[in-house]
Amino acid sequence: MMPAKAMPVKTLAEYVGEHDTRLWRVIHHYVDQGRADSDHCEVEDVGFDETSSKRGHNHVSLFVDLAGPDILFATEGKDASTVTKFKEDLIAHGGAEKNIKQMCCDMSPAFIKGVTENFPDAELTFDKFHIMKIVNEAVDQVRREEQKQYSDLAKSRFVWLKNSENL
Image (cartoon, rainbow, N blue to C red; front, side):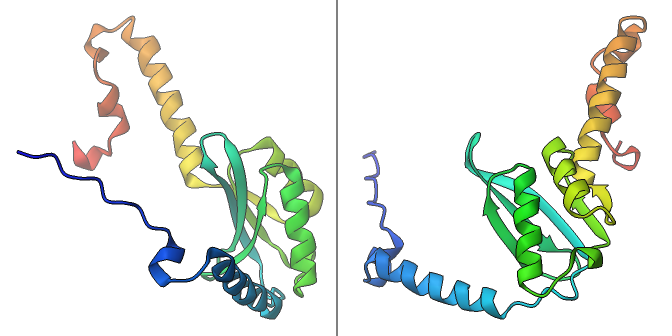
């Protein structure tokens, strides 16, 4: 059997037959136009989180309207200043900090600080993913400590992490 030849990877510009500079100009034109027309005066519930393009580097924070499918704002970084930048953008698009009733994020101390400083009247809620991660880690720690006394608990880690309906 002959090994398969690697197919050359094409860029988007090569697929559409345009230079990438022109493609980026078109993208920026429509994104800028859409952002200029956006109105955030009715935004009340905001969720945000960060992501990175490489492990541990190039963080981007995204802010979304939890009542709709809209991405409200995106910015580089993952510190308290990202919340400040969001507040400035919210105001620039007709929103107001007093209208924000709920902010949902992970338990990052930087995000918590940003919310309490910039949106003092908003309730802060931590997202379910991060809460469940902490709960599962606590259950596992208790299991580890108790299996030293009760040998029946040995190798039972995944039993405690499953839904009881799935057992």
